[in-house]
Image (cartoon, rainbow, N blue to C red; front, side):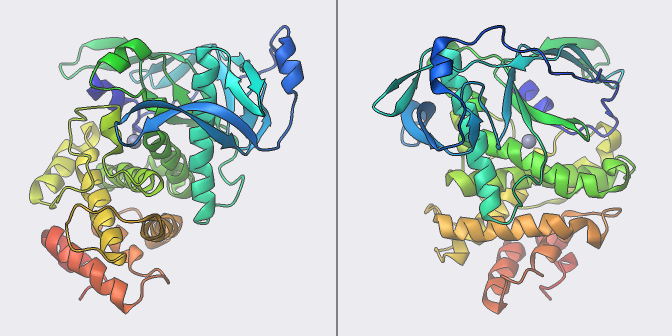
Length: 410
Ligand SMILES: [Zn+2]
C-alpha cells in the first residue's frame, strides 16, 4: 500500500498532465452557518486547536496553535493556501492527462470560540485547519531562509480529494486505484498547482502502526511543500519544465528533489525520521541519522532504469542523510552520533540547500549528477574554510566513489 503512497509524489517525466478543463471555481457555499458569520474574515493571527504529532510518542495529539496567514478563517483561505473540497479527478498516467469530474468549492470551517481560542466543531474542520497550519509552517520556514513571500504563486489544497490513479503495473496490466491516506504536491500546469489530501481513516491509522495521517504530519507536509519549491526553482527554470532532459540527468534530479524534500522536512521538524510516524515501512531507508554510503548500485539503478526509473528515494536518502550529518558537524557534534542538530545548524544547511537549488540550473542540468549538488553547495558564502573541511570530510566518508568529481574538495 505504501509503495502506492509514494507513487503519486513523483513528477513523472513523460507525464504532461494537460487538458484539464479550466477550473472556474465560482461555486459558493449556498449558505454560511451563523457561526461563520461570527468568525468573519480577518488576517489577524488566530488561535486554534489543531491535530499534530506528539514528538515523544509519535502519535496524534491536540494542541492550540496560532495560525498567522489566514485571511478568511471561515473558508480557510490565506497566504499559505486555499482549501477546496469536493474535487473528483482521474490522474491517467497512460493517456497522460488529468480529468476533472468536479473542480471543488470553498470549504466551510466550523468552530466554537472559547476564551479567544477556536475549537473546531467537527472532525473535518479539525483536520482542515491542521493541514492549513502545516502548510503555513512550511511556507514560513522557507521565507525564513530566503523565499520571497508570494514567489510560488497560489497553491490550493484539495481536501478529501477523490483521486483515481490509472497506471500500468509492473506486468503491463492497467490498474485503477483510489488514493487514500496520502498527501502530495502536483503541478498540473503553470497556474494549477497544489496539494492533494486524500481521505484517511483515523480509526485505522490510530490502531495500526502507521498512526499519523500524512497530512497531519508536519514533516510530510514540509516534504511536499519542498517539492513546490523545487518545481519553482529547478524545473520551471529548465526548458519545457525539464521534460527534455535525457533519462539519466532527469532521474538524478528527481532523486535530488526527494532528497532535498527530506532535508527541509527534517530542518523544520528536527526529526530525522519524521516519516515513520505515518509510514512504518517506507520501503527505502529514510532515516537521515543512518550512515548511508553511495555505492555503484545507486548509479546503476538510475542508468539502467532509464525512463522506467521508479525509486528516487535511494539516492534521495543518501543526500538527505549526508546533509543531516553536515548540519550535525556544523553545530559541532561528534561524528555520526545520535544527538540531533539544533535548529540553528539545521537552518544553516537548509539555507545553503535552498540557495543551491536557486542557482542549480545556471551550472547546467543537462549532465546533472549528484556530485554537482555538493560542488554548488560548497560555493555558498556561508561556507568558509572550516565548514568546507567539514563538508569534504563527510563526503570523503560517504561519497568515496564520486569524491573526485566534487569541485572544491581537492
Ligand atoms: Zn516526495
